Image (cartoon, rainbow, N blue to C red; front, top):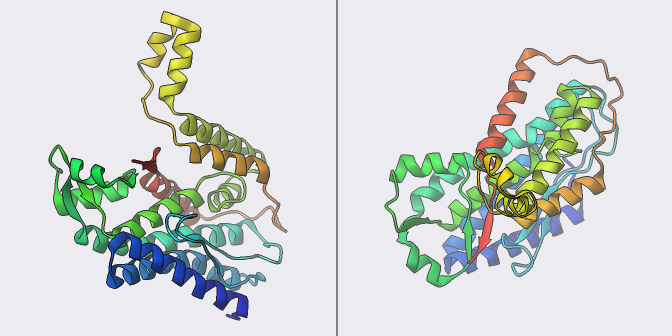
Length: 301
């Protein structure tokens, strides 16, 4: 792995910005170091999964570039990390392996971080938590499972106040969900393209863009508009729709996917068939996406 000066400089800056962010969460050096180390471990594991399999298939691929961000711009002190692929990918099999390796490595790194972080977290009264202001985070299924294992049902009027390490684990789940969105050239898009035809990849990509817009607006607002336009005739339909608030960030992601385009560049050899083992991993990636996804990831109090 050949690291350049820019790799080292960006990594050092990201260590600094995530440290400052962790310091603002925990208020002490140990919490800051723990948050920074946990988050960079998760992000680095994800990208190194791509890098390892890229090298395995002879792809010209760079080591991860970490992107620092001041805490007042990014609530986690970074915009993540990325790698650059500088040569075509030969087969769908190679595309699948490179695409899925990142999320799998990322979730494997996230789970122990999440477990440790939840164990370090505390149960607080909601009124006490809300009085301090800040961010209220959505709870993905995977986080809810571990919370139930360690704390059981949380009493009404109380909530789990996340330790900085737990917040790093939450970020790992959120990043995994974002990358596994089956659209465009995201990791989920690579997996979808490798599993299905070019046409089905495009249909699925467009469907996901529509779903993200719905999640961005929220069914609560959509149903209100439907009631105003259609009146009582819309009531029977609205009763079967789950009600949730929208998160504007999903609309931003939909716009980004539209700008990137729903199409996927072809591999050099399009006729490679995937084994049942890889198809099983494709199903696993869908389950991981569902387990990491939350309709309302962040709400500002």
